Image (cartoon, rainbow, N blue to C red; front, side, top):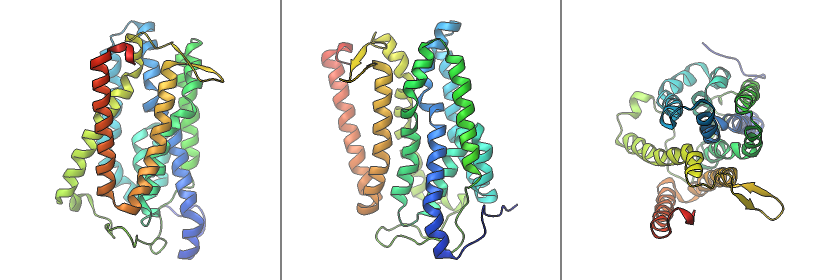
Length: 303
């Protein structure tokens, strides 16, 4: 089944110049709209527990199921993207984050084979940074006693944005893009069966699992941890205004998440993927060890 481009086909060079940045912007918009489902979830956990009296572990089961559906279905989503194109998958994905994430990253790679790091960094960074725009409004709506309304209103608006943006998405045609001349990388697409026969696939697979497990666990538990430590509603003075500790931590986390992804992607376009990952992982290990030492020597009050 094939879907025609949103506009008439153009010559290769003209289409590339006209469309690839537009395609990237559309992908970024979709990722921004989808971000709250994952990163704002922790704001709702204490409120759900307080309202219904459910156990925290039971509530977080919903988040676990969400992550499982978002991640482990991506091979199927990738197959569907190749078969039906990005437009229909993201249109359907307005009701599911996995379709949006997989499709937008996939499309960025295809449109920017010469600048993959930057393109994927901007796309993934939009998912990290997106919730920074709405963390405070969502927190304010929840504080006013409407976490159910926040669920419904933000979910509805964000779903509509994704579906509208999807209507203009398309994959590049043959000859519209060019490969990088500075970084060693594959110059053709591999099928899933071809990929799983290479050792590097399993190395990358393990790296992704190890990287995201700790991050997702921490993000999902920021709300409950701040509540347990008694700092959830502590005001942080930001000179011009004060903000509760939990929304401030989430806001800062989202901003740094959004900045670091395109930054390291851009760096990788210049010094290579392996060198960039080594430096980034070394920084992360150093920061994690410092956090553990701080907690051991000063206790919860240090946070």
